[in-house]
Length: 270
Image (cartoon, one colour):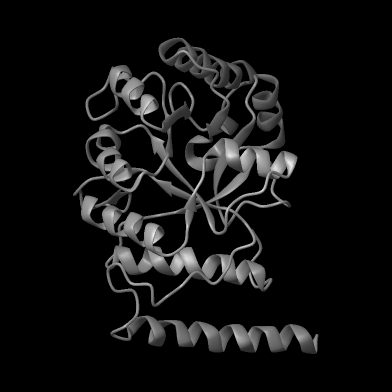
């Protein structure tokens, strides 16, 4: 009981210190290496949606995204693929220090127009989870030709269902259709074996996870906040969402550095 109280006191003091540290003129400047990675035991999986200038939480401005990618490049983070993550969690493959997976949900066209050139600039791979029935059908979503170009240049295209409905609200037959038909469509269009999945709205249960496994997927990503590690369910992998905020760059750096630290200290559980 006494130890738990001490931890809470230390956490309170530390949280009070963060705003002071980050408000200093040396903290979190563009391209800064002042705030170095505090070490991470798990794998950070960043979760983006839109990269554009819309004034909504899901839209990270291109200039902010560029700053974030520069921060990763300049601060000893190493961008890995979902295959690397899977091989580490399932087979113990060694990873570089401070591994990060970059993911996008929904398959917006701005991922191609705005995020893709920046990712190429820094030589970073990424993964886009597309809603298969939206591709080449709706304005502001990717086309299959764009997906093919992305795939040819290090951007993996994976499944986010057929229609972006919450799977836990569907019948068994509907769930199976969303899982299998999206995979079939992506496989046919891109000539690949689609093996990764992101849950629409983040909703899932163990039954849905088993259906994914039966359909041939290797892993699935949630919107559960935290880092992925040895204690993670391979079909319920944690991610760290990145949103547009009053100071998007500062928010990004705080999440990148302090969430893994809190997990390491046992103050939050992934």
